[in-house]
Amino acid sequence: MLDLNPVYNYYTTVYSPATQTKYDSHKKSELKNHYNNMIKVNTKSPLFKVKVNNSMQNYVIGLKSAAIGLKNFSEYLTDKDEDTFSKLTASSDNNKALSGTVITSDYDKLPENLRFQIDSLATNQVNTGRLSNSSQLNLSPGSYSFDINVNHQSFSFQLEVKQQDNNLRVQNRLANAINRSDIGIDAYVEQQDGKSQLILESQNTGTEDAIEEGLLFTIHDDYNQREGLVAAYELANVSQHPTDAVFTINDTEKTSSSNNIAINKMVEIELKKVSSSPVTLSFVPDTEDIINKVQEFADSYNQLVDIAREHLDQIGAKKLLHEMQGIVRRHHSSLEAVGLNIDDDGHIVKDDALLSQNVKNGEVQQFFNDLSGFRADVVHKTDDISLDPMNYVDKTVITYPNPGRAFNNPYMPSIYSGMLYNYYL
Image (tube, rainbow, N blue to C red; front, side, top):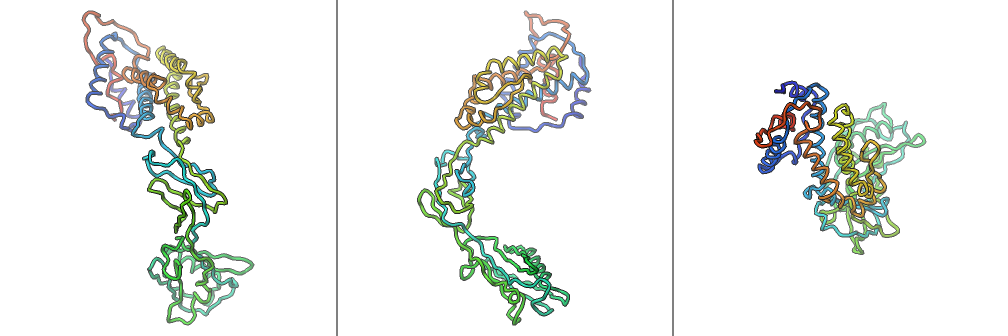
């Protein structure tokens, strides 16, 4: 009997536990069917011995793991609950003016398209301070305080102006104090030709959160001070008033305080610029996502081919490679038709342009959903490999089973294909 300790130790030190998916969980009926298949295979299997070494163990374990991974991904591609091929994305015919993101998984409720006309964007409030000589000082040294009202809340600030300060230092300290307070106002200093000014911008846009006179924030010196920082640097000077976005959706006029809007909790829209002509937002198959998933399938398939190629010193590996090549030969024309080519090494290589075109017209989705086609043959072969990977190693036959009196031994010939390393560590 084979000593399994080296196999177990090799597996635990070389391989990290594989990530489990829902396809690694099975119903009792599925496990029973798998057990019965093992019995069926092993009843007709001869007694044999193999030459156990690290290379062979690596080959068999990798073969079984790759086969399970490829089968799981094949099932994922056609899993209706995953919406693998039904996922839609929003496509704008003018991305500079408008873009959209689908936020629902109920794609049947999405309209065929939406037509927008953007008349104006939502703007924020901007206060532009006095342009002052950077090296001079607009006010006397001393302690100053001022208040900012925003979101119906009042925030107080204090600043000590020193004798050695100048306008640029004071403006930078004011900007830092406001930014650190995180009250929804961004402050920064602009400099030009030896002069500087403090700019205050609201993070919010539109008039929905306006507090008074249509403004999103107000700023004023402490009432006990006759002239303070706000007056000295004219920080209350509003250079841009907040406005709402005005646009139409399918000829119905809308307004919004934000340039980011949601429509019926299905689509998020970002308005970017005023449009001189209507912008159409369509809902199309998510080409990039589907192509990425097809690439992952191809990578899983190619991994199995590579494992066989790396062990061509094994007659069983040559047999496996021949069987994999037989599958792609049978489906060569249909693979090429959707944009999946086969190179000289037997790898699946995608033609991005043709694959993208066939995703849009639904050919790729139909190809993988064909239960009698390429995917079905791949699943059948991965079932065979994962059930008994020892079928693809070199072995010495000791004796054949008695055809008249078969003995149901589910484990001995498939000692490497049982549950020892089937994602349980």
